[in-house]
Amino acid sequence: MKPDFAPQALLDAVDGDTMLREVQDWAAINTGTANIAGLDRMAGVLADAFSVLPGEVELVDPAPVTAISAEGREFEKPHGRHMVLRVRPEAERRFVLTGHMDTVFPVDHSFQEVRWLDDDTINGPGTADMKGGLNVILHALKLFETTEGAARVGYDVMINSDEETGSLASRGLIEELARGKYAALTYEPSALPDGTLAHARGGTGNYSITITGRSAHAGRNPHEGRNAIVAASDLVLRIKTLEAEDITVNPAKIEGGSANNVVPDLAVLRFNIRPKSTEAMNRFDGELGVILRTIEADHEVGVHRHGGVTRPPKPVDAKAQALFDLVKECGAQLGQQIGWQPSGGVCDGNNIAATGVPVVDTMGVRGGAIHSPDEYMIVPSLRERAALSALVLAKLSTGDHL
Image (cartoon, rainbow, N blue to C red):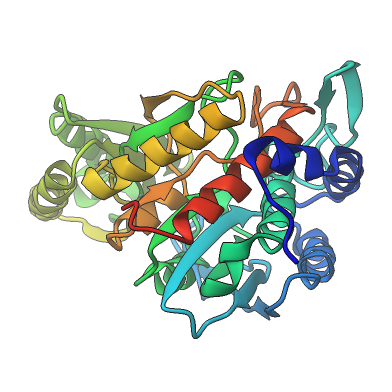
């Protein structure tokens, strides 16, 4: 007979000591996005951990991803495998829960160890972003499986290896698993250490523009050259004019050039955009095409465009707001005060929302200083957030909340 899981009973059932021990073990494995060996080890650890749930675990190969080198050449970037767990795929109502195993700290980074800051706080790579969140997924689902409603619904869990670099090797997989789901939960750390959730999000896009000119002697025949650096500089000024209240443009780097006495024949411009709406995203894309053709004509150079929007903006529609309201209600029942605020950051929740599925994407642990050696996780939040997710899933398994 299933036990009666009132909110307090859910919290009491969470094994916080085991959660902490697992997070410490997982954080000790370096999983910088480029550390394929570390990611492969982590994927195996996660596959073993999630195999206790009543479904099938699969390690999925990454989709091919290309990038542009400083020499203007396109090359394929290696990525780690992604972990997918499918539970009760035949169920009529299903959810998707997502997280990432990669961190921003490469294998040779000095930040590799976990240490205690005080009785409630640990400092360590990925503890908040987001191995703590992955552990919350695992223990929330273990707890959810003990409730009455679990058998009526199904879910997929997707843990990718490349979120920190834009999820280019997993975007298709995320969208495939999200489509048709009743709701989605993503386990980025809370937007603020007090548990505040990220609400609406802007989008992001990364571009590499390769400009091919013609070299010449800077003194004897400069007029015969076509200066790629000058063309790239002109391009920077033109794309900055596309900034508006609903979009920012950040030219980040120009690579190329040669000796001072040579007209440079190659430049690579890299820039990022942050559109706040789909309209802004589409408007920029069209205007960029016009500018690139103008640069080609005015400077008599070749232009090759690589990249684009990787995460579309994430507005909050009525269904998504209903999911936020449910999370807040469940938090209140557990003694947790939960609010939300808009965020300029992006995550896989952007891609899930683009499929039309309501998502709350900061269901992970409380913590802060992510992407820095000061990253920390508030240890009691492991239990808090596991109980919160289990209660949300239990509510979603019955009734028509969305």
